[in-house]
Length: 596
Image (tube, rainbow, N blue to C red; front, side):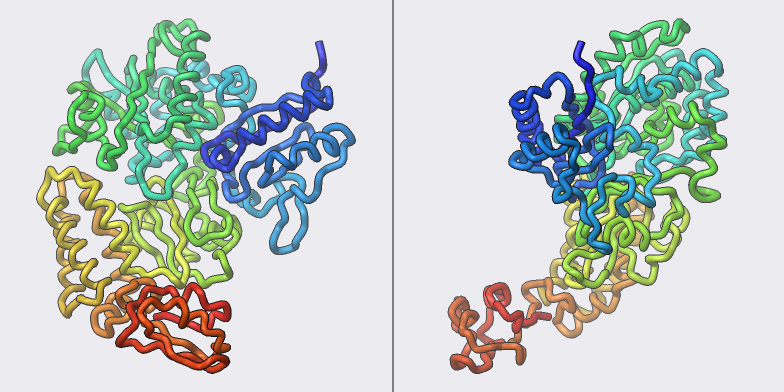
């Protein structure tokens, strides 16, 4: 039998796959066969490694060399130079922008230095479609420990002691939630994993499901044992086909090994799992709407109480946690609550996975200890603002969250601190915005999303968000009037107090937070009929500065003849004729045209 002397790990998460990872993998297989190395070098598909900006990512072991932005045409050089001759291909290594140094190991890259990758620990390092690889890194040991050495109440006590709070938004203590379900009488109970990740810019849960599906299965099985449930559902949006595929493979493998089914680990505990594919309705992220969808009904929230722990799926006691919450469970049981509680802050324990998107250099996934500052996440891990622009705000918590300004960058990120400043942790989406972003337009974007996704069941959410959106639209189109700001604040407060579910109650957050920290932008739109960021097209005012060289390109592209001027002389825009299309702004090679 030929000895395997090297492994080529290729990120095959959705991000890298969309960047061409499959073609890179095929090129490796072809080139290795050409060089006669197909038996000595093993190519392995993994999940997401997090550094999405640099994909497709390839790691070559045993050296652990980290190649980024690999293309099929680069593969022959890696095979010949690295795998045949032992010479690292330096041009394909990550280049640290600060030092301009080419770094061979991902551990030394600034993107990873401040991370604590526990939930994401296996992603990018194991083949998610092979249960043996999960077992090789300690997988299912926690389930075995729970079933053979702990009582159900002992498991719940350990979860309480750990301080784990739900990672899906509200941050409710996980152990307490399990206790409620355990205390509810009934011989039939359910465990549900909420994988209906619907926030714009969020892909944390998807990456865990794609890169480490067995961790979720193990966490759910431990929960089932703790609360007395013998059946579970993973509610995953159908837009995640790769995650669903790998979950199905993982469930089948776990059943074949006796890790799901009857008498698991020789105990009397039985547990089976099913997958329910959601149709992509944002409101189904709310737990009562999610359960209605599983039951085959229209996904609409219902009043609480009764809470799911008392009367949930099909009226039976049910515990619901999201993907990241369940992903924390095996490590807490295996390493102990004290270990977990040593990470994070006094009231917010452990790590949190954030999806970094927007105007940031290093887009991707980052898992950091709770209590880290936003400045560290955006600048030390995220690499700062793209195109050397100035930071303006960060939206945290998705459509239910809030926009935080520069003066709050050094605030520790934890559940209670965020609530105090009008935001929330949410599922972990971080959308970074620069100086060119209009905060009124941002509020309109998120409110448009929540308004269109409203189930329409309750009047405050259905009608209130619609009225707020109409006001925001008027403001961005230059038709705002005095009193609009106060009306937005009043409507927002009313919706928060009276909407039926958590999604409706948090819908006004982006508007209220931008009013709190960027009120001057609303006032400029209403009183001066001006968008300070120059982003609202109907309020944009273009002018030509002294940087103009008189090339005449702007004059040529103007569709209405609003620009006049002689060759080699400064040109002028007639504001009365200009239709604010932006063609001149885009075309000017000297950046002599400004807007705002």
